[in-house]
Length: 105
Image (cartoon, rainbow, N blue to C red; front, side):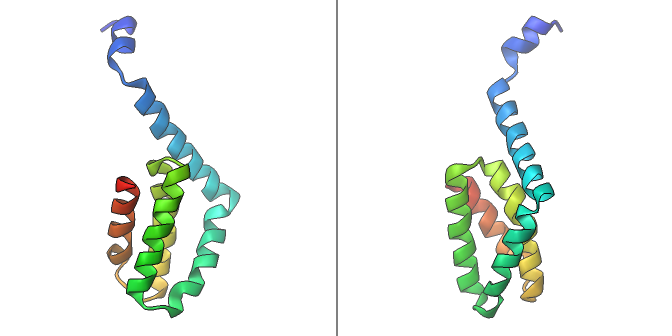
């Protein structure tokens, strides 16, 4: 396999988009933005889980409007899982709908 053949067949735009999303998610984690977001969302624990789920899905749809779906999911899922644990709800109850919302928005 030669380099010109690789250049012609690899979807470079997709690779750069995914790489940028992962880099943005890591920057949010290392800068403390994810921790700040989790701290702000912890006040939602007093609300019913269904309402919290709806709010999280709206947040995910709003985030994915401005950033890539990969970055949005990488940023939100750890925060959502921690929130679910603090509310004593199975993490998948929040994580699966948030992931689907991010993917479909």
